Structures are given as C-alpha cells and as structure tokens.
Amino acid sequence: MTPKDFAEKLYTFLGNLIHGKKIDSWEYVGIANVAFGTPNGAWDKSKFPGFQFRKSELSIEFILRAIPDTGNGSCYMVVESIDMGAQLANFHLNKKLKSKNGKNSLIENYSMTVGLGAKPKAKVKELFIKHGFNSEGIITQFDENLDLDLVLSDILKWATIRRQVKIEFQQGDSDVNGNMVRSMINIENSHSLNQILYGPPGTGKTYKLSSQFFPKFTESKPVETEVEKLQKIAARYSWWQIVAAVVVQLGSGRVTDILNAPLLRAKDEISNQKNPRAMIWAMLQTHTKADCKHVKYSKRAEPLFFWKNDKGMWSIDQAVVESDSPEILDILKEVNQGTQESLEIKRYSFCTFHQSMAYEDFVEGIKPKLDESGEIGYEIKDGIFKEIVAKAIKDPNHDYALFIDEINRGNVSSIFGELITLIESDKRIGQPNHLSVILPYSREEFSVPSNLHIIGTMNTADRSVEALDVALRRRFSFEHIVPQYSLPSLMESSEALGVSVSRLLETINERITYLKDEDHQIGHSYFINVLSKEELAETFNKNIIPLLKEYFYNDYGKIRLILGEEFVEKVENAPKMAVYDQDDYLPTIRYKLTDLTSDNILEKVKTIIGD
Image 1: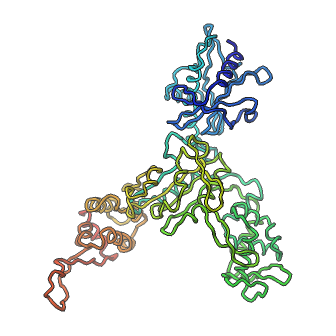
Image 2: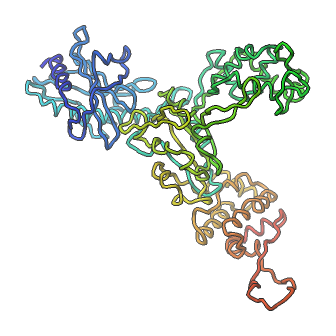
Image 3: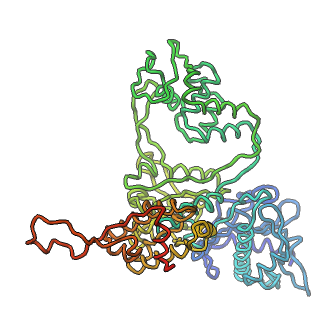
C-alpha cells in the first residue's frame, strides 16, 4: 500500500463517519472549525478538513487530517490538540511510512520541538516509554484489508501520549533569561485552574502569592519601542499625574492636544478606559485652581494646579507642581530618557474580597461618571474579573491569573453570580462543555477562557474550609499552608534572642490545637525578623496576645493554659462589692494579663518552652 493509498483510504473513512460514532472511548463530534500551525501556517480548513474526536473523561479533543495530495504529490497525516491550541504531529507520509519485511509501518521518530527548540530524542523516547508507548510503530501491518477502526484507535492512543509528553516538556521550559515560557494547562486535572491557599493567620499565604505565583505570570522582555517605554511609565502613575505631566510637557493645550500626546495614549492603551476624553476632563476639573472662573466643577481635590482660560486652553502652575507634586517632573525625566533595558509585563490582577464587595465591582455594574461639562452621568463599567478575562481572551498564548486575597470574606454567591459555573475547567472556552451567559447590564455574551487561573487565599481563623460556600468549594482545589518551624529567618531570631523561637511557636501551636483546633494556630511570620527583646515584647503585646484573646473570646483562663502563669496571673485581691447577697454573679477565679516588657520578656517565654 502506497502512502497516497493510505491517505485516501483514511480520508474517505473519516469523511463517512457519523456524528457520535464511538472509537473505543473516543467519540467523533464532527468537522473541526479551527486549524493549527504547520511549517507554512495553518491548514486550509476548506481544502483539508479536520475531523474532531473527544474523550470526555479526560477533557481531551484531537483533530485528525488526512491529506492525500497537497498539489505537489506530497501526502500528510496531521494530528492537532484543541486544548493545547497546537499541532502534535505533521507526518509527511512519503517519508514517514516505512517498509519492513514487506509491511508498511507509520513510525514515531521521537522528534519534538517545544518552546525554544528541539528536544533530545533520547529524552523524548524515555517519556514515551514512561507513559506506555514501547514500540516505534504507531500503525503497523498495512495491507489492502486495513482495519481503519483499529488504525484510528491506535492513532488516538498514541496522540494522547504525545500530548502528555509535550506538556511535560513545556511545563519544564524557561527561556535564556529565566523568564517563564507558557506552561500548557493540564486539563485532566479539573481543579488546576482554580485553587485556594488556606491556613491560619501569619503562615505566608499572601507572601506565597507574591513570591511564587506572581512571577509565573510576569515576563521581562527587551523594550523595543518608545511606545512600550511610555506604557511602562504610565502603568506606575495615576490618571491625574499623567494628565499633569502631559500639560507640563505641552505648556498649554486643549483636551484634544492632551488626548493625542504619546504619554496619554500609552496610559489609555494599558487602562481599558472606554472614554479617555471624559477621564481627562474629570482630572483637569478635579485639580483646577479654586479661583478659576471658567471651571464650575465644585468637588475639587488637591493638588490644585490646573488653569483654564477663556479660550478653552489648559495650563498648569509649575510652582505648585514643584512644591506639591514633584513626581510629575520625575515622570517627564523618565520620558526624556532613552529606552530601558527591559519591560515588565504583568499578566495578572489582584484584589481583596470584603463584606461590601458586589457583583457590580467584580463583573460589571452601573457607575457614575463626569461628562465634559462636569455633569454626573452613568455608564456600565467593567469589574476586575471582566477586565482580566478580556485580556486573557485577546492573548491566548499566555497564561493569566486573578489573585483574590481573603476570598472567604466576601459573599461568593453574590460576587460571582451566574458566573460561578463558567469558571469550571470543562465549561471554559474551547472545552467540551463550554458555556456562555448574557451579562445583565451590557447584554454582552460572556465566557471564561482556558488560560485564566483564579487563585485565592483564605484565613481559616475567620472561617473554616468546611463553612465555605458549597458552590465555591466544589470548583476549587485547596492547598493547606501551615506554620513552618525550620525557616532560616526563625533561626536568625533564635540566635539573636538566645531562645529557640521555633520551639516557642511550636509549643504555643500544640496547645492551641489541643484546646481549639489547627485552624487557629499562629503563623511563623509573626516571629520573622524579631531580633531584639523590644521586638519580641511588642510581638506578644500587639500580635500574639490579641490573637489569643480573639480565639478564646477573652477567656483568660484558656490563654493561661497556653502561655502560663508568667503571662496570665490570678487576681488575688478582689475589690469590695456594694452588696454580697448575689454570689452567683461573683466569679470563683479572676485572671489578668501581666505586663510584658523588654526587661522580662525573655524569662517569661523561657517558661513556655521549659528552659
């Protein structure tokens, strides 16, 4: 059987498949409406259709193309992965269909290019074997009675392994500068996109976000253009500061002149501001000098340095800028400097949930705005979640993240609304059970992309995981962040104080866990960088004891069981009462906190650990 014969048979077989046909555990779902890369671009879908297969339990979908003739006598078999958005293999059958002992075989040659280049074939083969592919032949023993159901099954089994091998390489890749190369999402882990770091206060949950998670969604790259330099500058300053810098730069000008300034355009590009002209008007009027008769806006805010003349020209008081807002001059110094070596690109947003957080803040809502005349109107304004979703959809080749600190403090059902279902991995764009909704205010169709991670933190002293909204628990995986007792910084504190801070913290937590539970332990961060007796006394007075009072509802008897009588002592001399005929109201034992100072704190903490 020639390569062309095989391609034609496979093409005809695929074209005759009925929607819903089962091939082992795979289901044929129809002609694919997407195509992914080849050495010369994407396949022409109309000329070389792709046939789509789904394995629901793994949330994997492949596209298979059989191409008998590209026009120059070459024939191909192509396999693409929808969830990875990439081509897995592009077999030039004229070269890859090998004859051995009179029988043709389609051979895996362990060639794989990922990220920055080709991977060592020995390593690729090692991973194939690890995942159960022990033979070079993908399809073997071609003959005129070829069983195409079996051939298709072999191809899909092999493609599943090749996909996994490719993912493992991509997850381990980084570029020459140590920057992250996009790690493909492992869709088989249904909670890989949504996770919550939970634990007692002071265990470093937010620190872990900033130190470990933020860098995964941050990239540094060379600044190639003046526009990128201006965007970097504009990202660090607020709108009123950028508007002021532009007016200083212009000397004087109309709103249109300000709007067309390169620095202002850079601010607009990174801000997703729907009406930058209105924003400029608002900033100018808010910071206009009080005695300017050409501006009627009353709700002004410091600094007041803008001025509008009778011809509609805006200027700025340089003296006020120099005295009250010198950072505006720093902006212009940066603008006038040459381009910087690198630009930091942050592909994440950060927010904190609180009791008054609402759907209108998170997704979209109707918010007041100022028009050019200073009158208040209303507009539909995107919330932080909708904004990051839009960025992720526009840039499908990179991962994005929304970090939510204190996620348990908000009313999740109210904040997410109908979108709580859309964040599930298999309900996202490009996934088997993709869902979308119509948003209530904008009436826009809304879906969540597969390259957006949602990562939250929660303090278990406020609320346990079990008490969380059931809908939230079901859609997130959880990582328990516990107190650490062997950190180098705790060792430094121990050496500086001459007492084992690690043993002190561990002893306190053992007693808290026994009297209450592990959710109310005390985190290690309270003792990091505590290097003097004064700092140790302050830590107990301002952090440890207030936490214990909160945990045990001011029950000093229980606090005494944890810290000891050096910290909580009995009240021996009760004050004289007005009457003594109501003994039920008189406590049998009263306690009070002792004074903690730099002079006595070391001796007191030694009693906790038995030194």
